[in-house]
Image 1: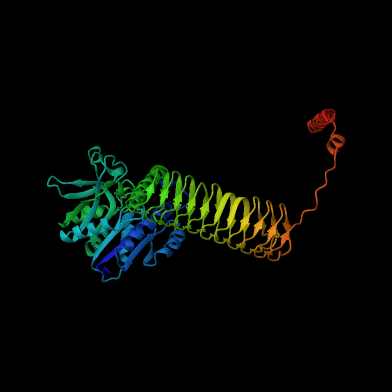
Image 2 (image 1 turned 135 degrees about the vertical axis):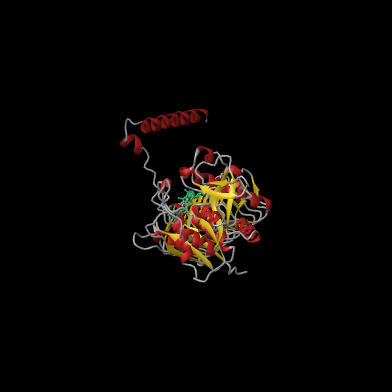
Length: 486
Ligand code: UD1
Ligand code: CA
């Protein structure tokens, strides 16, 4: 449903000095999205056509990140600093006749959910307030603005940490940095906000005092989950937010039927999708747009990024990025599947195997110590230990095409472009430079010659020569013994 009477202004123009980072604060990532991305994806769920994001610091990078949220429009903040100025410019960019409610969100408060914004808005409308603050009770309120109430229990103002008296600092009700305002009241009050405070900035929080002075109703609603009000100003808070989000995401999937053996060492991005009866073993990372189908067992020690895993597949101690793993396929231990690797149903990528931009057909196996790049492999194939597709000739990449039911001997090198026909075989150590017809056995290794005594002659005095001499002497003695016995 489209909410025409609601506008959203997201504050994202600050420097984020305390992050000490070349990356703007709101673009730091947790759980698969940026801080700002979390805020915008929840904002999207409210269904308003008016979403403004106020930008200034590293504005081009922040604006570029908005591409994922087509409803959001950037508004530039000028040289006047502070959340009050940011909100003022965001509101000024709304249609001039917009007379609904303005939800102001902070780009650095990533864990609040749409349902909380919705509840805040409902309460604001029910009480016909000019402003409603989303507050939270925090045992450790350091760093946040405090909500100061009068003797009558009504909200009087918000005081910033840096401007607060000792008595005010003892207040544990904090301002989460999220509010709803009646548009007209906000426009009027912001016009009166100055910069006479410890930071010399226009504080959005001053609006509360100004509205109360004009006799307007200002309400405050407590966030249902105080932890979700966490604002990210430094890397300590970023890690804390990451952990809280991860716990939330894991719990969501557990309730959907996913077994997570060790939630503390398992990391699941908010953007991933798991089916019931997936099992995640310890130290596993499910990242990006990964999807995992039912019955799959992932881990331990595995990372999946933007991967697709089919029903009943297993992936042990492996790194998988942008790859597709078919039903009942097995991967690892210690496999590396890169972009464009596709294992069909029942296929195997075994130990110390790297595969990229290649398809491995149904039931085909790449069990040990292989590199497979730019290859198409049919069904029922077995690549012997150490098989390599030499796909790169120093200038261009070429394809290797392997038919159905091909078996290669250990340590076969296939120099692309090359084709191995259905049912073909290769000998151990073969270097395949020419196509192999269907059903042929390809051998490329010259017959073995043993130069007897070479080591003792050419490496006299070495440990190898001594060992060889001893071995030959004992062979002779045994031969002599046998001759006597016979
Ligand atoms: C702000 C609130 C504080 C609240 C806390 C909640 C004010 C004055 N203080 O403090 O009461 O408890 O959030 O997390 O509002 N921003 C701009 N333009 C600016 C400055 C900031 O867009 O000129 C943006 C920032 O990018 C950030 C948000 O506003 O996303 C909050 O700014 P920040 O400097 O982090 O405010 P806090 O000190 O955390
Ligand atoms: Ca902040």
